[in-house]
Amino acid sequence: MARRVLALRNLLPPFDLDALAAHYGELEYLNLPYGVDGITIGIGSTTRPRILVNAAAPISRRKFTLAHELGHIVIPWHTGTIVSHLNPQQADAAYLQMEGEANRFAAELLMPSDWLAQQFDSADTIEGYFRTVQKAAGTSREATFYKLFRALDYPIICIQVDNDARVISGQRSATAPQLPVKGSVTQPGMFGADCQYETFEIEGSRYVSWTFTGRDIEELDPRPWRAIYSEILDDTGMQANLQSINAILASACHKNRQRTEQDTCGAVFRAFTNYERYADVVNHPLFEQYVIKRVRELKQRT
Image 1 (cartoon, helix red, strand yellow):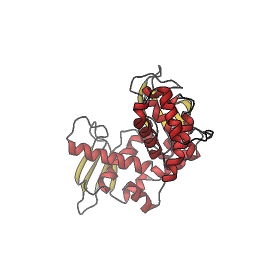
Image 2: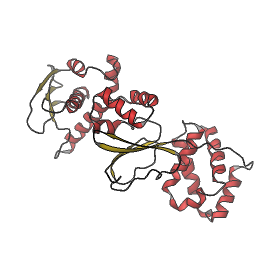
Image 3: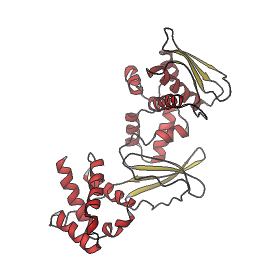
Image 4: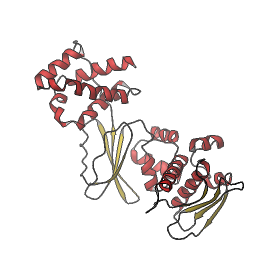
């Protein structure tokens, strides 16, 4: 729905959000009671809705609140008068669902997924990508961090850390490995060698990121992959795990079927980082040959 609104008005960040809101309701900034970010009155009625935004909030919060209130107006099943708290403490399930939907609408309106992908493609670093998006969208550091990587098909992990490099919170793209648990210590090489590590600071908060690269494998062994795989399993004593190991590889290939061969091979190796029990198989000198042959065969089927 947010994408439809942007397409209808031919808008991309940065754009005049107040002017956009004027198409949907009467906008007013005023001091609201403590804890209230915005109120929208008369959604779904015959008259134009009134959008009230807390003037005492920081600029970036006011902007997200306004986009949030537009979500309440545009989403068809949001009706009546809605008092919005961007961080509700206690609320019923129906209210929380509407607030979550309005938040997702606001994030997409201010930081459209296709636009984010374009900004990423033109950025040289994760820090540069972060700063460019935040400046253009006018969003808070927290809102920007939440949305930055969700739209990307490139495997990236970004983590906010404390002074001891411990995880505070993290975000990842869909094709990236799982995030480390909160409170764990991060290290540059914790995800292996096939990635670019970066550290940076934004508004006093520290971040570390890993941009995962592909693995370029030259096919050297003339044998079919089944013969190579059988030798690996015999050498490591893992014959009983034949199906599960093959399934891990096939799943990684399927998730990355639209990516290049090099990127897919990298994704296969990352998939096995979650299976420490298969370390002997992954470290076998023939494992790369098994991977490249299997990846090529599976890609031919898609």
